[in-house]
Length: 158
Image 1 (cartoon, one colour):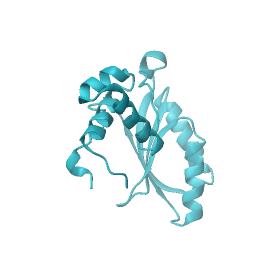
Image 2 (cartoon, rainbow, N blue to C red):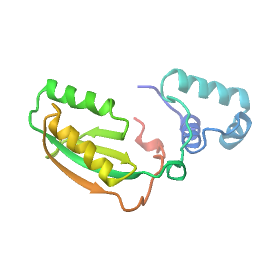
Image 3 (cartoon, helix red, strand yellow):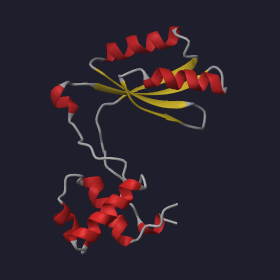
Image 4 (cartoon, rainbow, N blue to C red):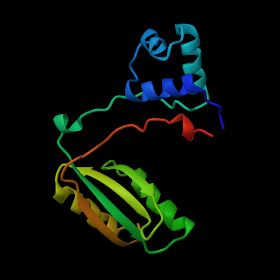
């Protein structure tokens, strides 16, 4: 585990909100000069703490999509069944997020399709495929209440 100090945590919190901040503004925000600040950023990148930089695109402006969350339970709970299902998820562009969970279901999957009918046709294909779905529950998103990056609390770092 990499040891992080308060400067590193400030850098991470700022970059998680604004990946386009200039070197000088970042250094100013954490009260360091530019060179030591930038060395810290490079060290965090090299260690894999910073995995990359991206833009949050408002796809609703470009191509409206209907987000749908689905709880999925598989028929079999063995490594081959999980691997097959996860490969299907990876090759389905309409799946924008998928997590394996415990507690009664196996996966939470987020689909984003142009129409609800498009989602249902895709799910129907999954049901007749070799995906091994036992049961699923669909939750159509009516509005997004909050979406943000998690702020790193220094007390959480061991």
